[in-house]
Length: 231
Image (cartoon, rainbow, N blue to C red; front, side):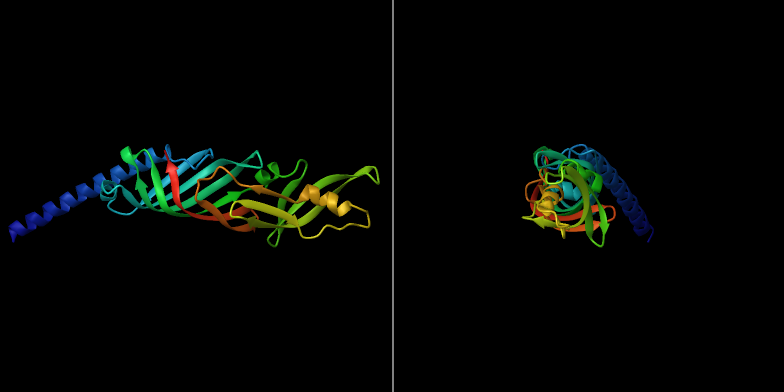
């Protein structure tokens, strides 16, 4: 019995040492990965990595991580030739295969959410137009247009619906534009308030799937496969 107790104590101690080493290796790997992970052609301000699963060392030995959660803030992507800032991307990566020397990684599957603020959306709208939350799942777009017939400019605000097109483009279109009996006014206002922008710079294979208009900005659900994370 005494020998059995000694063996159990040794097993517990060794198990504790293994867990400590495993956790230390995990924290080191997360710290290193935060400086290496990239999202396609986009530039990121800060990145937070959380590697899930235990033990970590056996996953590394097999060159595949079960799951990696990534939070990227201040992402500079592109839209219609302009830079667009994505406030935050949160992604859950599944079956992440590590490349030779751990210098690259590819996720078999990925799901996530991107948030674009209204201030950042305004930056890629037509010149002079502003975008804000309009309530009830709508955005409010305000712009000024010149009316040749009157020889003056007018400012109009419209409630618009935001939709996704082809898995990569955000479209903003006014539900209704009062013409007020002025010939061509509706068309002029729509030229200023209706627009669509393709969100570029994100990894190949990652598509926008669903968009929701919230008080804090546009929340866009994303999903894809074969996502290159670093290299």
